Image 1 (cartoon, helix red, strand yellow):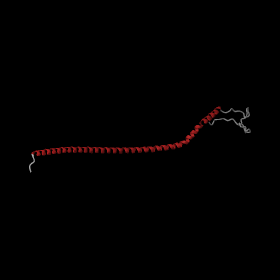
Image 2 (cartoon, rainbow, N blue to C red):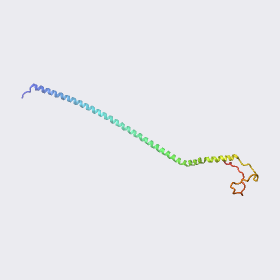
Image 3 (spheres, rainbow, N blue to C red):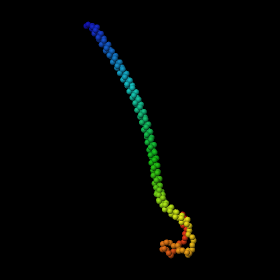
Image 4 (cartoon, helix red, strand yellow):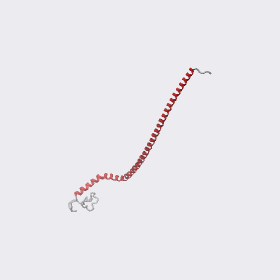
Length: 164
């Protein structure tokens, strides 16, 4: 076999050099792509750690808020029970005071007539007793106004209002 011509060898060498450059270029692009992928993976891992930390903090904050709300609920329930007991006590007191209120209402209802009676008795007391007179003296004998008991003794004069 004969040796290939020089032109073929140069073309083959040029082709090999182009293939070698292309391979080097592809390897460089592959390395750059691998670095990009690694950087993205690291950023994703970092982002994942940050998200997990944020989720953990949110979980702890949620747990703290739930505990606070439970405490508020217990406090509110205790306040409700206390207020219910106070309402029950006041209802009992109202039940005890209602008869007295009715009595006071009746007293107030009768107050004006009672005041008039007391004023009349005070006026009678102010007038004083009748002057003493002979039972057989001038004037008609004192008797009740019905006239049914004409046989009875004459009424003696009396003094009003000493008990008011």
